Image 1 (cartoon, one colour):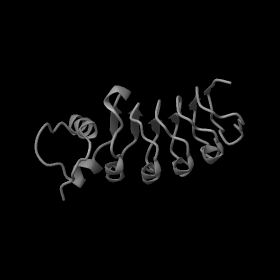
Image 2: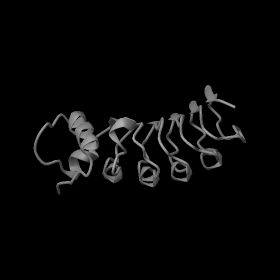
Image 3: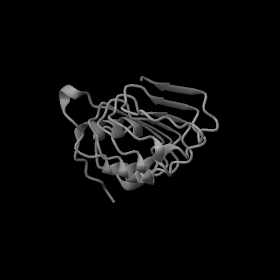
Image 4: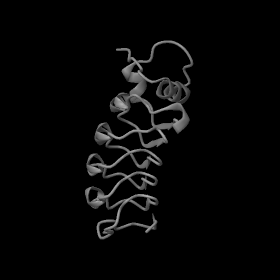
Length: 153
């Protein structure tokens, strides 16, 4: 079954990753994606949707930089994620990330996050960056393997 892209930047990133510059893209091809880098800088406006990521079920590494996203609920379906970089977006709610138990790298810098409790159970995380967020209460007890923690107070 072919998929329809609602955002040129997301489509370009997927096409680059699967090495398919033209033609229809199928759900099977999205399922094969293991890494995806999407940078959508503020002067271009926000991504219109990241919903197609739900089909990237084998994704291990995802970077969504300056995409303007707020709702990351679709990311809860990406159980194989190990690396997640969400720098410089508009994310406030981290609840969708609490089930991503394979995460080792998590960068949430430059987001208006205030509460890190929803991610407090991600005990495999080694790198956690909350620089320039609005987090004031810091609890690191659940991060059993943490090697790097970045925050600005």
